[in-house]
Image (cartoon, rainbow, N blue to C red; front, side, top):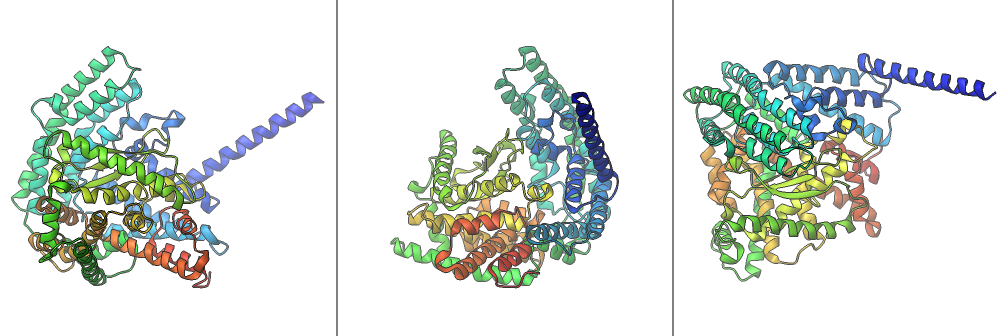
Length: 606
């Protein structure tokens, strides 16, 4: 009897394994049977085709699959077109499913996926209208930054994959150059001031002594912290890096440099994307992509002008209450930020002190945030400085998300290129934005959701992500994270900065402002340091529309919160509101806003 039972059990188990195998085979090769399986298929097709994303997420490493860590993602122009074609096919398949029975979150996820694929498919019209080599996120600075920050070294296989990737840099840059040639033939050339910035960066990267290059220095630091590798293995790896830098990496960077020097001769100083093929439509497309709304460039511009006036009025009120005499707001803010009590001494050790202060603010913010959120992400976050070789063209700060396996934490990178750009009264706000309750809390929470499709857990709709981070700055004020009026002044200056972005981004790309006109408007209305203003304006020039996402997103989160307060009355619970807006992962604002109104009964559910 026992023998017969065992035979039946093994037969049943075998049938289950066979059925599961057939299901996987069918999902991979044909239209998946369910929407849930289709979401998984889209996710895996995309990440398996992108070794760099696989390395960043570490989604396969915990399963022992690591071959992707030896490779670079394909940066060829053919691959760019292939991705747009795939989005069109994926959208057609998505719309082939019967959605009549979808309700609640399932309906929201479908709409978000449809919205994302629709914009991706539409991108085909403008596939070569962006600049893959630029001072902000260009391939030339992505490569060393990626190897320094995302490529982890745990054992000798990781060392081998690091060397393999260094060996592959020349092919990746050749792919990029082919794309630049194709763009140039279509009249797509970056402005001359952007090319000069990149050429300067390329000079700084190719340091004469290879041991001072970031690819050598960063690997050396990782090897020094590793006890699993032998001295011989470490010495061999560093010797190979030196050899590859001089024999392969530098020559490939020099090839790119020579191409850009030739391109500079035919470039101009026109800043906006209106000059590109179908440029006005391209800007409308990218503005919708980043704001996830249907606001027109003119509407965004007018919102910006209105918000600039409101925020400046609030700033003047704080300054007057603090005893400051205001003749000109920007002059007053400039004088304030230059006061010794708000500046770090201009000595080398001050840069480490800046990082220490950011870490102290983060620690305090974590404690104060826990009472206003219903759950908390497992992933940790830390503060580091932006690599020195890319400081000049980098923003004042940025955040890098944690790996999915928990081995690499989220990181808030602070720009220390000029301590005069870092007034002490602005440090709280920047920390709240980049870490908690801002980017890290939201992105780590989204990564760890189990109810949302994996594709949406790792998709970052710009207005949601950046809007949330700017909302987090306001949240810190609303829930008494600080009492210092100067810190609140720093918060308002940061919000003013984002409102000004609405004006200058649309000014550059819609109203055809020059770089100098945009710099002048931002300088006149913010009182920011000249280097910081120039870097910011040049950021908007190579990344059209993205800068508008912050303020548009913040306005949306605040409006939804007011709706919740109005409907809930005395029963309003900030934890419940935060749980609703963060509990589904990143979403397009127009979809989230509709879901919020349906949840509150302000519009009928359908």
